[in-house]
Length: 334
Ligand SMILES: NC(=O)c1ccc[n+]([C@@H]2O[C@H](COP(=O)([O-])OP(=O)(O)OC[C@H]3O[C@@H](n4cnc5c(N)ncnc54)[C@H](O)[C@@H]3O)[C@@H](O)[C@H]2O)c1
Image (cartoon, rainbow, N blue to C red; front, top):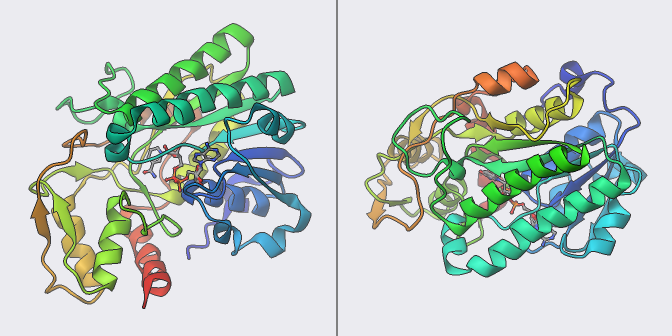
């Protein structure tokens, strides 16, 4: 585990504040909830556990005491969301169905959860008089345009129902800011990784999937030639960006903001590096056909994040990979 000094970074800004983290039993949401708890906030988590796990609270549930409240419900349940939002100063909207390939198989379900669910969260936030909503947007909105780095002014080109849903969420964030004066921010995450990211799903993200294969002594599977690159971003960077956005003194007004590490790593490089870290450099990656909806390259321009939030990554790629690998070794061992 990485002991990021949240107090050093955010001081007393969240002391005594109440926040809602939707999808807080998931990977990113559980890290956000943890940082907020460490900063003295009270956190309500709403999650239907379709992808998350209450075990993700284990590291801090005891220390949080009654400052952590977990409600098992769907973000499509407007009454439950309204109850959870009451009295909150901030909403960190992380709940969603992830996975580009699964969204291609189930587009209607994705629209319900990721679009209508987002609208439901915004409605509750508006009625509760929340100060700001932070939305987990996605770099997948950029699609396949070859221009690098990706900058927020580029036209979005969603290639999958997942990307389209995330883009619709951004539009809703902007519209609630413009129509109702509810301040919002869309943080476009680029390939977030770290401990607690689920490796036990057919749709696991690449670092989690490689870890699972390597622990089992199998070669990592790469879709395509492996020369696709990603801006892999350790999860504490995403948490830091959310906290900066919540604290921002000026209105954000639904602006879209890239959140990443600003480093580009190919999937082949990642596979080789992880194989060595797991002590199995002999396990060479196995290549399979490209997956529908996957994008070739991804790298963020971070000037908007710097300008609007004062954001700069706090954990570089390799510093985040080490504790992540250590965690997978522990939890995935037979
Ligand atoms: N991990 C990444 O690289 C990445 C990149 C871009 C955007 N995002 C976005 O960040 C957010 C968090 O992603 P994550 O990686 O932590 O995924 P995750 O699957 O670990 O977390 C999502 C959580 O949402 C919950 N959830 C799903 N549908 C729900 C519903 N109807 N009601 C209540 N809870 C529901 C799941 O149970 C899960 O706990 C998501 O919105 C995702 O789209 C993630």
